[in-house]
Image (cartoon, rainbow, N blue to C red):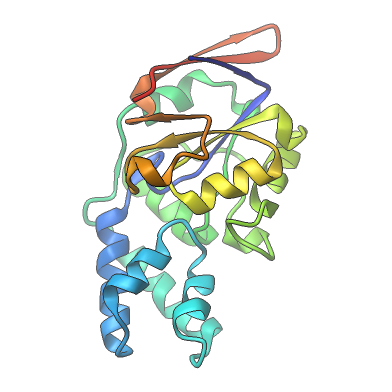
Length: 216
């Protein structure tokens, strides 16, 4: 499949790097500490801002206070945080002013994980600290596109979660899903599904990014 776009917006966890083991360890421990169902909490945590996960699963808690605790737990847990196949290559090929990262992680956590994974950090990124409403709201991707000087419908998004795909599509962007975190059945709203970024080849011609995608 061939896609053309003016800019590319990357989710981070599950797209550029694998942090799933760390995410699951942290949220499992946090859930047990508060007498919550770890399975339900971990399921809520993927692809969403941590503060919104806390509000959803434990509205009786002080979300701001708990969010500080969870964030530090996630920053401290670096075991297994590695770049996913194709991520470094694709980031190196695309023009730096035509890409950014739009993540539900906070800025300190995003910078930490990108560093652990040995991936380049774009000059400007959108994190949980930059939005009022996280994914599945379109706000993160609308802001990511604007950061690069484009409308969202001129951009293409790489995502791995239903919440992220919904955010991208509602914003008006094309979305390619990675089959890294959720089953294929949960990713059907995307324009295509790939195993990893290794299935994506990029070229830049006359101001347009051309992506050659090998879908699952």
